[in-house]
Image (cartoon, rainbow, N blue to C red):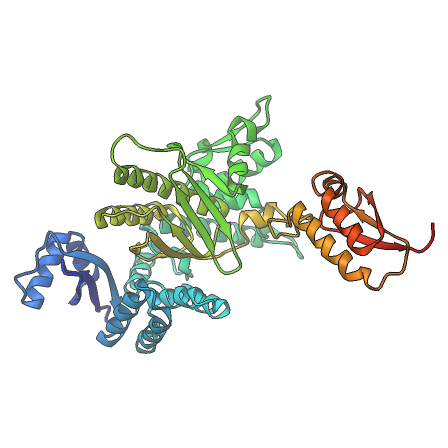
Length: 484
């Protein structure tokens, strides 16, 4: 990337025959990106550059646009994306690294490399690479845009630190953040002039005030508080730093709990469930594993009114909104694999992919989404900022120790059968005592009674079964009795 702010914009596109086209254009970022907003214009530019009149602007499909430091970096990145899309992760790693070697600030290449490493099960490398991706904004063009915006909005000689979370944010949002820190600094200066020595001039604000600072400006219309002290503290905070937002804060004094009044308990409950139902009758399932989170979409009770393809498309599009919402609500991070219901038409797959990217625009955490494969899979990554909601509100099941399942009662009975046969060879007592969970004792006295009879005949000893309420379902003990 040149220091004068000029850059090379690259466009990856697919022609009707499935071939890949990589084209570039020099120019001013803002003007060129506005031109590229129209697909018709883009395909026309590609036709002119490639000298190929056979390219049909209506059929040309734009894969992505990006900026890179050199043609070599762009070509390596484009090749890596194609290999990754086809599931050839090991090969894609080499090309992503080649692109990064050419352009050390190539944020997209870092993100793609992290996804491929994660798919190969190399989690430590993937996490480290993802951190590098977050340190490099999507392009130097974005760095320049943020720098220019802050310089234009600055009304004093203060310096400002713009973090990676600012990528893609509007100038209005930047202005409000700058106004807040300016007010905060002015307040500290006032305290400094008047406060005795020693005095505390500033401390980190509380959770409720952080929510006001981070969310109330652009993401919520109303803040409802059910605590009078907290309500007063928030109003005081807004009066000092953001007085225009005081009308958006409401004190709740209803008879029923505020969570019940706004059905928050229902949302929290749904956020902890493995299965989430959709309004149409379909559902999604969310499974957490060590390496990734898997999301599966099913039609469930929804059968549709017309053809099957239409039913599947409608279910997938409805699932997209719920998946994006659940990802934000549960604060799911890392690698996420979404298994949509298979669709025959490529146009329908693209509709679902586009809908997902649009739904994720509301997400404050950085995401990277790959196009849907022919098998209906979408691979994406999301920045992990803290533990997911399930880890915060839940703990592993004490009974199954987090496994999610236990051995069936019948299997336990047959395990006991084999263990007694094994140990009976070294036992000289007149009978055996078996202590088990009450449910296993009931099964051995009832349905599996023939098993005990066969076992007594095989070892030539009586077996006495005692239930013990303190035993885990899978726990049992065998004792040898030497005399009557």
